[in-house]
Image (cartoon, rainbow, N blue to C red; front, side, top):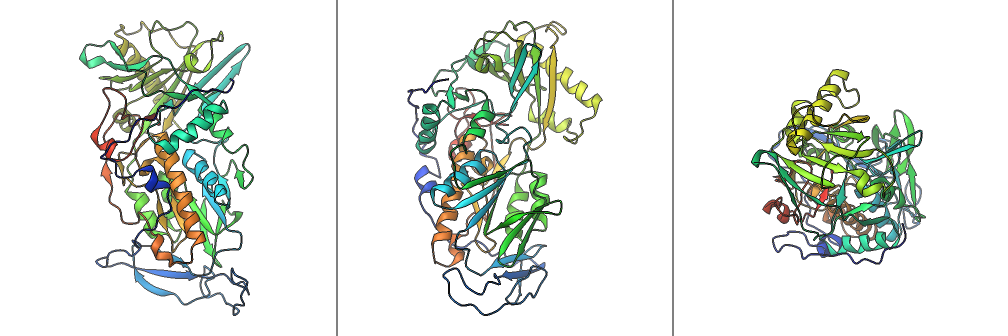
Length: 496
């Protein structure tokens, strides 16, 4: 794919939006929000961490320090009211060359790393991906004989509503990383008589030229201050001697001045449960996530369907069906590859441990989703041709059902932050803006000499329900707009 000269259409943001890009990306300092309510009766130990170096960050002499707790702190610990774990408080200056550890290599984590590099700070991204980076920017390629199957099995496309994100997308277009998806996309209401209703071509829909993972893997190709470690599953955070020490099942993974949590779900909750960050842990535990099944299905003969993507209503087991061959194969002769998503309600009723899906559950879900395609298209049961290939995946932590509606969360005492799409909604643009916002916030924090408390953000913000389609928020697309989405500064993206 060559360079594209197409301009990105950037619709104006709703006046109801609470967070404009100028607020998100301009250096900002908020009033302290790090102290929990005094009504809490539980006590926890607040540990003060200071580095044992004989010199501070500016080269001045420092008195020798001694270890006074299991965290190696060098100052007296004090008791404060919190929830049920110890709050770490770093008091020593950061290193001469601060290093940020980012746990999660999805869109938010990657753009946080790039944003930090633009501010002159190095980072290391830890990601569990075996096949590549991207998190929910996932693409699977299966090669067998002379056939190649390719599926975007998570994020299907994205659009632009924010000018800052629009500038990024323009750059991706110029580099040939993304292109406009001009296939017919619309909606089917099986419960309302059926029939496909196409969406208008505005706003444009964009996809990675060789799949969404290609975009994710390309973002850091020219970075010089970002290190990537994968596959790596960070299992422990430990504050020690003024730094965060990360490890994977007992194996040390480095020490960092600041850490960023760029993933969510039960794994993130386990990681934060004993981290010394009760305020951040409490906010993360407020997040409610839906479960969605994804079925990748290849058909030897093209399906008689006059569209490439459709949101489905009125079918319990199906909420989206997308023709990956139409947008990714560029006319190659191969089986037609479709990605199908279940509804959140169906995912909840049929949820199992995603690491070990029972065979009987997999077979049941697969058949239900294929029958859902028949129902959506008005076919008789058994009329749909049998797929020649299927692969089923459960996204156990697919989409948020609630959100604080803020760009990022940061605990200045613990030198830790959170970024992710769920902070603003549930789409790719929100993930990108969140990562950029946290990078700028951390950059301001590292460069200032003001009191750390001024940089607390989002530590007590309330969460509010999100309304929208089962696989994401789609303000800007006809028939699926929601008032709450505009208030949360969301944009269009299929992101599960």
